Amino acid sequence: MSDAGSAGVRSTVGLYFHALRAAAGHVYRRLKFLRLAYEQVTASKVLPHPVRSVLFVCKGNVCRSPLAEAYFAAQVRKQGLAISVSSAGIETTAGKPAHPLAQEVARQGGILLARHATTPLFQDLMQRSDLVLVMEVAQKDRVAKLYPRERHKIFVLGRFCKKGPLDIDDPYSGTPEDFRLCFERIRESCDQVLRQIVERSKAQAANADAAQPSARPAN
Image (cartoon, rainbow, N blue to C red):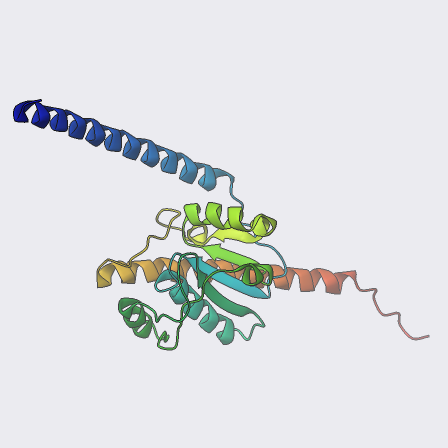
């Protein structure tokens, strides 16, 4: 085959694979849209009860889940609640620090990530957590597939935010503003989650008090 013929074949093949990638990308985006829509409509916002331990999960445990863990733990301490808080990553190794921009946005919000060290997600951590909050619908599906017995306790954190999409996007390669917006959504979502936990605890306590028999007056 001549050089011109070979170049033509390569060009045709290149165009074919380009079109194939474009079609695959379209299918992926369409499936993701449908999965997000399904989650929006069907997923419950009613948390398990009681909640004595909360686990935040993201991809690398260097940006989103450390911010969520630190903020949520600070709110728990402020309210004097007996809730343990931790975080982990689906794709990480142990001992890495939080992203510098995550540390900075946390510092600006009055919390510290200087001592954070990444933790890989593992079965024991899932089992001892009453509530698992992930950052993306795809992460919910993945964690539920890895730990099907814990499926009932896995929720998408952004489900509790009143604005924005379900997914709280990873700001890892983004700007300081991306980290700020990410942390803003995390704070709002965490506030809503904690409010529900507290309200359900108070309602249970009130129901328990109402169920107690009234003291009889002395004769």
